[in-house]
Picture 1 (cartoon, one colour):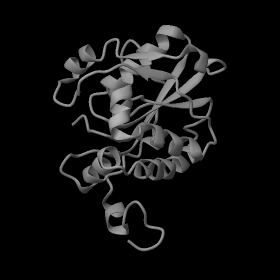
Picture 2 (cartoon, rainbow, N blue to C red):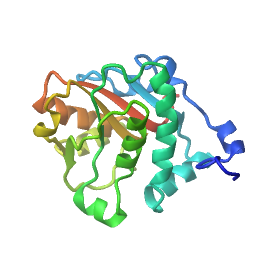
Picture 3 (spheres, one colour):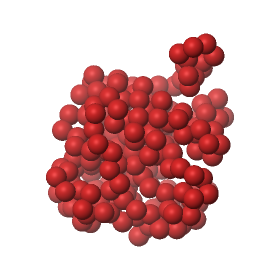
Picture 4 (cartoon, rainbow, N blue to C red):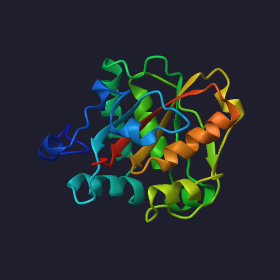
Length: 208
């Protein structure tokens, strides 16, 4: 890479499968994946996630190999695009999906917190710890229904952090089934039924 290309070289950047969600944040494959009894107001992912694509290694390094700055840089890039499109209008704060205590200790950081910082940079929004997570096993090999069941009761909201917040942006790294973001939304709505919720992720798997 030459100066200014981080975290992607120009060649990889040109091949990045962008979603274009900023053009239709209330009607896209990500928000369709998330909708249920709890409605998300808007949602956007920077690019489409494919396990065999070079971008998957980038996200793997971010998450497991001590490179959280990758998430912050990519999120900051996309936040500028979203800001220009009006995505952040009415949003009061940004909240990362939390890691449980032991997973955070082993990894040394929460990659979603770094992504949240990048997402909040362009609009200048505060990043808040709105949620906590108790210990749970990996959901990687479970189906969408299995993930929803396994995540019940895993997340709980911090009511004090939500004072003065009417519209919250939930942030995570990758959305596959949408179960994690939905479980977080359920926990938030349990203490604030009137809370408006939107979502931001770096990557989302395609519904196709």
